[in-house]
Length: 575
Image 1 (cartoon, rainbow, N blue to C red):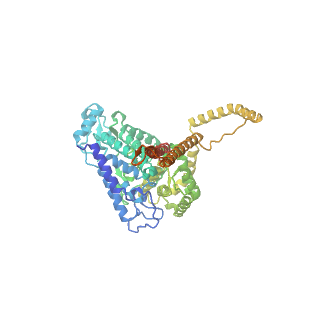
Image 2: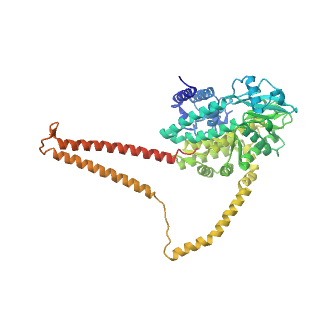
Image 3: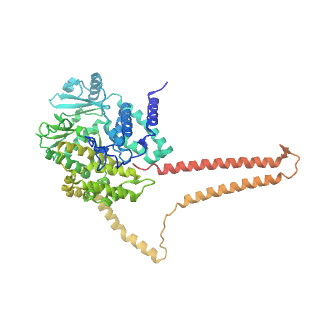
């Protein structure tokens, strides 16, 4: 009898069989001749390149990518979220696939209200009537992990309650176990796995998904982003009600307004969008480059224009932290792009990424320089997110794996470009970056109090030990005992290899000697014969043949064991 666990293996094998030979595993590719002049092209900047209008490749690739996204959507929440993560990996997937996966719809049929009531009452330890004066039966939205209901607290505070679907954690846990096993097999036994490193990619996905399953973390994100946007009068973030929030339910302020995607050009005529757009762009730059936090999904559907003319940031479940090193690199990258310095841009990207076999630094530098030149030539119409996405894709083409944060920042900035251009088509992100360049550069020069204290301790240790160490070096030089040791090779490993070679050569010589001796003994008459030949000669032949076979098996087995140990020691390349 097939279990649901076995069924997941069957589904994944079917998926790999269907798409394993498509362009999905061929890596990101750039087609400089792919231009779509049809009206409306270019609405998805993720799908095109600098100078293109948004074509994602030929029709066959687009159809296959759409089918792949639809199959992932049918397989449930784990694979919907996996597709959304893969949509940010422009260095791994072709444009048609990243565009199709970015359009994944995380909407499913709502769960019965009786199940919603049971989850809320179990988590809060009280009935709905004891906690809420009103709780809407019909959901405002329904997704694969949870659904949202409007409610009113007993004190009259209007809120929305996000309720996690029953059993979704168990489903995702089983799916992750299957994916982990398959990723391990692929990384160790296939060339594609060793090139792309599915294990590290899955580890990143696991961290992201576990965060989305814990609504308390999203509540903390709401508080954090509320503090970061407090100084901007045109931005607001709904705050959580912590007393009514657990790992499976999230209660937060209800914000009345309209999604900016529902507003057309006519509806925006009464809105003073410029200050809103400027504050939104400046806030995101500071979040990424100064505070090291990233709202990974600021697409226009998650931005709400309130009745009082402010912009509300919604759905903060998908966030990421940006390490200080990446903050500094992205700051330098933006400054190099703004200056039109393609060679410096290529150098920064090369330092950020991990080169794979076949990486051609000169070709990469030439293509990046050409890309930056075209971006600068576009003038104030340059969209920063599009440039970062194209740089990630160029890195993948040339065998350079950028850090995962690079792709996520590119996707976030791309969504931000879409939102700002929808609110104010005349807004120029490149000009905004240049206007805030001093602030951006200053953010890279800041040192935290902890960093200053650590540097002071290091300086104190260095100062205290320098005289003693200098005296030892001078004394050793005066006595002729000064030595410099260079670990150019692994001597112990070399010794083991030479010993193994010597053993094989020795055994081979012994076996050869036995064969030669047995051949000479064939001419010596003997009263004991086997198959008409002298018995002692036949015995030596058999022993030598058996030893030869055993030696061959031993060589193959030990070589495979060493190869596996080397692969595990190196591990797949970081992504």
